[in-house]
Length: 324
Image 1 (cartoon, one colour):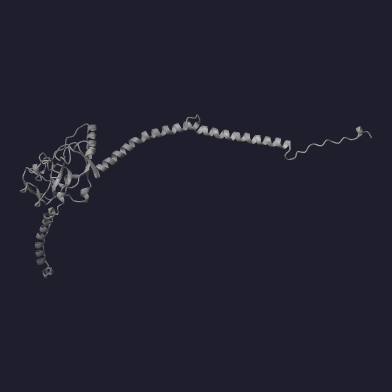
Image 2: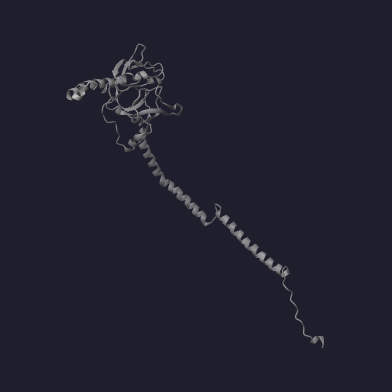
């Protein structure tokens, strides 16, 4: 048979084995697809980063500006509330705890000078009694000043300004005074002994530490016993101080009621170069000063106890027995 008549064998196709060119081509295509996908992802991340940057034209930036505007408006809306709360706290502190006062005169120099601002503790005398040597601020109505209403103005703005000025110690109260306590109830205060010193219950005071330079303790002689619930007060600048000595013809005989005391001055806060605490001078810490004071209530108690005991012995037989 001729070769041309022989049936032709179909040509064998090349198998696609692993590692063959076709596989490599396909894998290359797949790698290209992965890289392209990764490129898309990287581009998306970069786009997000750019959107997060300040100043971008995205919608988030507009929202940020709105938030800032809202916060700015909220501050101005809350500011009046903050001012009202601060004013309310100031009023409460002024009424119940601490108040600032302005020094308008030279009666307490050099301890306090004209223009000084002091803080006054309004709670201290609810916790302890008055001490000799305390510097007190008090209202002079009904003792040093006649009982007349203080001058007022019909202008409400000026009245508010005056009230705020007094509360913060910018202006002085019309009837408020600041002096040092020399004698408390029951004290025998006298001027002066042979050395020109003021004595309290017979004990001389050494006042050089706080008296104005070259001032004598007093050029006005006096001899008083401080009434119950009253205080004998004097300024540290004795030559110019119009204090208890000059008010002996007024109600109370020069002393002031304890009930009129606003509080104890404890610190100078302005000007800053004069900042300092106002302590009780050492001369008032003498134990002998209190020697005469307890004897007064003790003597009164013994004087009342004797007749009371005699009356009981007459009324009830049980009290007639010895020892009772």
